[in-house]
Image 1 (cartoon, rainbow, N blue to C red):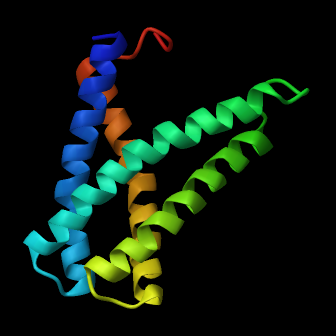
Image 2: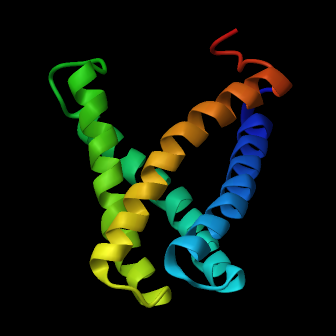
Length: 139
């Protein structure tokens, strides 16, 4: 499977599995019901997809104006850090409000999710490529 179909299947599966797992984690971490935590998990998923599109568009516009071309380790690190900081800024207030917890508790939940997604993304990509094969760019 290649092209846009692959991307749609990837994002859909990634987010459905992520919402199922994070709903449980958010419920346990905030003493909320699974139904209540699921709402914020879905919202987090939507925010992640939209933020990814917005952030990468803005980053690529900035990148196109730079005199030094390519993606060095420093540029990749700056990209990842900028993405995560923007994501934290949007999620911590949402978690605090929706789950009725303090900002510190919300930040700890968000940092836990970040660590989870670091491992989850690696494992999901490995599994996805085993099931669907490598994309044309990597084959």
